[in-house]
Image (cartoon, rainbow, N blue to C red; front, side):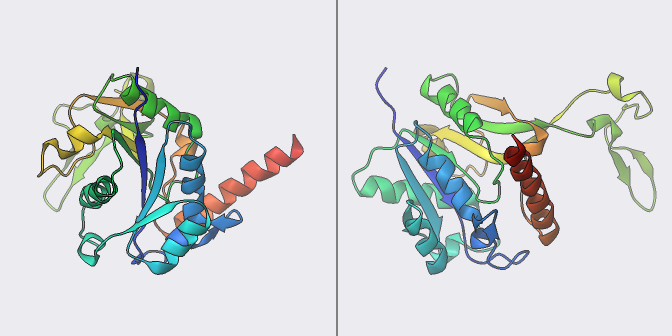
Length: 239
């Protein structure tokens, strides 16, 4: 099997409103984005690590920590911009420079608890041609049968025919898309120009522990993540 080239893209725009400067805010002794950069750089399957940004300060941090940077235009960094458009733009820029891209993996900088072994699993699935796209999922705390539709006129189970009163053990299990890792073949990425999803073609899943799936979006998320990291660091120090 010939070696496939894997492009890791870390999207990090500068206009965060929930946490100003979120992507380079200090987290566990380093800028938040650096945790994702290091995961990509330390993955044996990844052949190139690129930060896609519109922000000069983020770009400087990324370069200082070993990533390459491709600046994206402002129309791809707005609140309403789709991440898939920024990914396609970045892939095109890499290929225009003469690089070959076989597989693309997306690593959001807001997932600092991402496990390297889960990235390896996602990429192995694509390298071995078992799927066109793969993403990380985690078991949901709530069964879909226990979701409700609530309005002024009615309160009823969200799923018709669901029985929310059954014990937890008898409820159907569901999984949540974590956003930690997406990986897909370059070909499937460009097969449908109007696609907005990152799971395309033959899809697969890697199941990750819930404690690794925290996504930092708000100040509360950040505080919780810091406490969790302190716990892990304290536990490691006692070993």
